[in-house]
Length: 327
Image 1 (cartoon, one colour):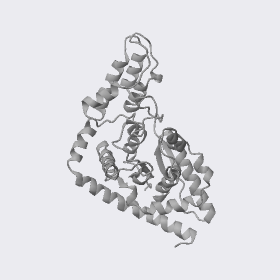
Image 2 (cartoon, one colour):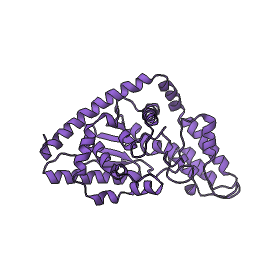
Image 3 (cartoon, helix red, strand yellow):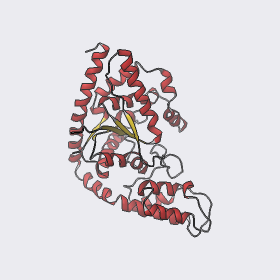
Image 4 (tube, helix red, strand yellow):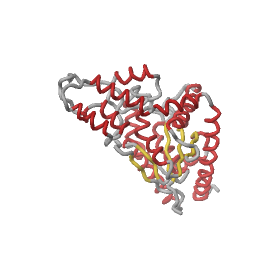
């Protein structure tokens, strides 16, 4: 019997999941969960790099798990857990930090990007990739689904694993590979920049219908008029539409043709995107209503997921402690 690939990924609890999360990560989880051994966590410790409201953080953590389940992650196939429920990860992060050259952290693009967008330059944000590496290595992940902006984090994880193994002369850590999402361009937000809750430019597919339409209608566009020919590749509206429907979907191809033909204004394209979001996420929106009415389901899922993750992480930590002489 062929052994299943073990897959790990996680998302920060920055609020309800948005279209960028779905296109870059969650769709991959859904595609992989039937054929792979899945470990998906909520990055609650990572959130502390900027979160300062305890009640809000607790609510966002629950919200992410609810959204995971609403989108279709199946706890029978996927272990879903909270980062802080697996304490072995933070101990492994310290061990990895002790073999990590400072220069490896200063070259991380995501750190520079977050500082450029005004996030405070604290040590937690600076060493974020080390904790992320510990998350991945703790469960012996074979593969990490990522968007293009996260490839560097998997590469630094491999570097840290190799450095640790070499420093202590022991094959403690497995080297993971990354898996890019199909059509893995970074999804733009309503302002054309990378979609992010932190940047306030996201689109929430679970938003109330009227508010959702207003949000989509606020997507920034250029000044081309209805009778002007437009380049779909240059349009934020089209990029989001393609990411949800799929690049080869007949609806995507038809919308691209409409962009290239006089007679379509950006308002028409935004309406088409709004209708697509409602249709595509209709079942997820309905499941989410059910889950919010049954919070005990989320508790059961998290308890089960934490047990599964800790079993793997405990074995990894035992190997690491032995390698460094702390067993």
